[in-house]
Picture 1 (cartoon, rainbow, N blue to C red):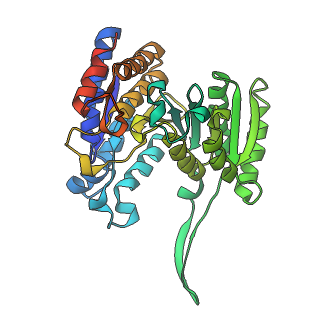
Picture 2 (picture 1 turned 90 degrees about the vertical axis):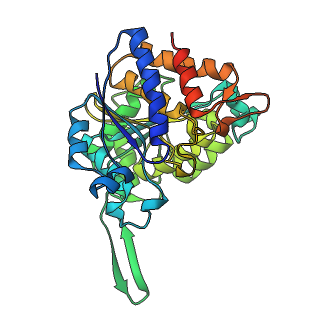
Picture 3 (picture 1 turned 180 degrees about the vertical axis):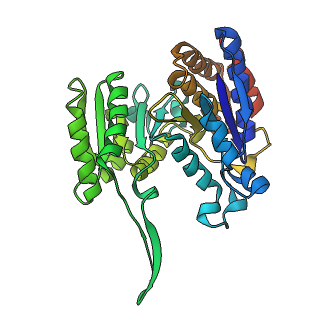
Length: 355
């Protein structure tokens, strides 16, 4: 199984090393063979090639079975023009791979309930929310510009969606909902935005193909409030690019730390892009402080969605739970009475617990 690996910037190389450990252990236990090829993207690519996404990187990723990404970006490159910044590489690779559905699970491990910002009575037995975010359309890819006016500079960004773009991400969300609690919440701003009105119309049309799934709608401002008021009402959420970007980060903090949450970006085939949702955290790079669990769980999602190995994916997820049960915590999720573990030790322990 050919995996293109983008260590990236900041803590990216630190956490990717831990994913290697876990995948190598999975390979031994489940008779799977992985071939890794590291490539440049983001700030590291800018420093070496002058481009955030070199053509060679995209070619390697397109010819692989899956892509595993650490993190990109950092203050070092913040003064560059938008199209030359590390984040431009991220947008470019998503488009180049044809991935359009971003899956962001917000799972609260019961061992970390006290790390959440919400009260325990709100969390109940825990959380398991899947946010499905449209990834290659909307305002992030719409027309934009600036012009002079009598009031000074004017700037604009355009939100645009086609029927096809909404249909394909809606079907991904309905398929996921069908395998879970058969509940799907579509989030938009149809009381104000024309693009959201089209979004709602198309989602309702696709819903006719999935009569077993209960579909509801919610405006994005209400959804933001409901996520902290009563998060257990949600199971699968589907929404647009910008709304999904915001709401998935909000949902992630219900779980206690960004360092716990993986993501998968999927397209029409099995090729997917897998990455933790956190940033590059250059302030702790190389200090053995980063939490590698989100990256390790991203590797589990890779096994599940690109390679069809539910058994191996579940083994990684069980191992993470076991290590948390044993009381080990990285600094971002440290709790009284627990045992501190650095990046390397956490990776070692998760790998060792896979059976």
